[in-house]
Image (cartoon, rainbow over all chains, first blue to last red; front, side):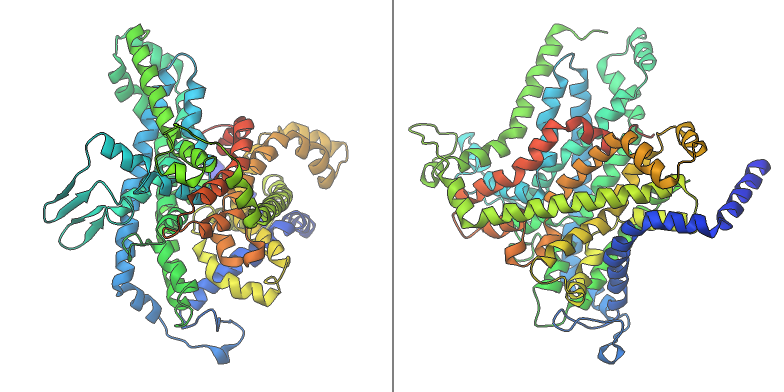
Amino acid sequence: MTVARQEARLDERATRSARPAGNRLAYAFLAPLLVAFVLFYLWPAFNTLGSSFFRWGLLRPWDLFSPSQWDFVGIQNYLDTLTSPRFWNAVVNTLIWLVVFPVMVTVASMFLSILIWQVPRGGSVLRAAFVLPMAISLAAAGVIWTFMYNPDFGVLTRFVQWAGIDFSIDLGPIAFRTRDWLSDPGVIDLGFSQIRLVNLSLIVAGFWAFTGFGVITFTAGLTAVPDELLEAARVDGAHPGQLVRHILIPQLRGAMIVVATISVIFALRTFDVVWVITQGGPAQDSEVLAVLLWKQAFVFLDSPQAGLATAVAIIMSAVLIGGAWPYLRDLTKDAR
Amino acid sequence: MRPRRFTTGALYTGLAALSLLWLVPVMTAFMISIRPLDEIRGGWWNFEGATFTLANYVRAWDQGLSSFAFNTFVISLGSVAVTVAAGALATYALVHLTFRFKKLWFFLLITTMIVPIQLILIPLLPWFRTLGLDEGAWQLVGIVLVHTGFGAGWAVFMLSSFFRQIPKEMLEAGTIDGAGHWDQFRRLVLPLAAPGLVSFAIINFIFVWNDLLLALTLLQRDYQPIQVGLANLQSPHLAQQDLVSAGAIMAILPPLLLFASLNRYYVRGLFGGGTKG
């Protein structure tokens, strides 16, 4: 323990007193990447943070070096954001994504991977069908799902008609209709807030495109399960259900955390699918944070709302960095 | 415990049905793209008196898809080239050299994997104007550099797991032979990490090819890639599914082919040669 700590300290001292030549050499290797990184990531990120305390618009951008042009408003952008009903509407829609999407992806891809894994031959062919959509852009996936949901000739609409399960219910707080998947599929009224079902239509499109990532991850996790463990369970006469529940699922914990984490990050940042299919509509029923922010910054050009948009961006980033903090620290530990 | 034949049969049937179901959306887009629009209204699965034609593709191509496709290739190949080259150099320093602020840089680089791109999106447009990157082909240079900056975390993260697999003894042997770091990087590390570089290049290519948000925000009409063209073509109020579907198929084909043919590299890249946990 003490020895290790001493060594660590020595190590640290060695790093600190690394000869300037060594520093120069290392930074020569780093320079090309760091130039792009500083100019097009750190500096804009700093500008987003800085400009979120000012009122500005793209027609009159905030500039750190011309203080005479500043219109300082303190934390007003944050206050306005946090008291705006439209922001909270976007928060609710984003929360629907945040809860439903990771659960769908994680559960479905885990069971798919386990099922495919049990097949003696041809597993990779079956797997390919689920994995291939991963290479498809979310914009294209959105377009493709507008065909599926098309009220005239969409596969879903026609299937519902053909199977005779075309119905609509209206029970007061719950309304649902098996048509108009994108224009008005219904709503669940919770009293304090409404869950618009159009979000689920969009989540299904994202789920279809993203599940492949989960399948790849869980498959990698399954190949790492020790054979002895499975053999022992078999000798003990465990049936497949017990095998899955008591051996595989505990062994897949690591993969589960990875899939859940990445799909939470994905859900919180989601933009493409929503933008292509509904642009946040009808009205603001499917407007998520990323879409709201984009509209504030780039659509409402007349009123200077870019300051509000940067406040939303900072809030989103803070939530993500805060939520992913353990994961980030874990990744940074790799740097030795 | 060998599954009984019945169970295996049921498993195969169920999985085959599910995987076919999973392909229905792509199939839908493909069938719409190769048939006239008025035939589609009866359902694409209705093959009575069906005509198959490439006319939709020709029309979409003439209506500007050709320039969208060209721009996408320029942006994707440019971004991959710059990101892989700069990323490999930086990763060498991060893995094999000691220097000040190493941990801090690594941490900052890694944050690009987590934060939403919206964190940098809004000031980028005025920033491009300041740098003169908002006009003509400079826009392409600009977006390549943004992809490099924002892809830096993934580059360093994935490449370092490959670079670390190179045995230390090999590098030490090189040092004894009097090879400088530049020689070691070029003659030893690059060839040995080549599979890793290929994996990362594929993942990066697909990622950049599929980007919508950056291009939508930063590029003017003549320099936009195919994803933006597709998003603009798509409109709930216009019945032009024939054009849109042809555009969608063209937008997904290059990454899909790359992915299908080099799948092994892709998977290896994602897990850096070994999963943890």
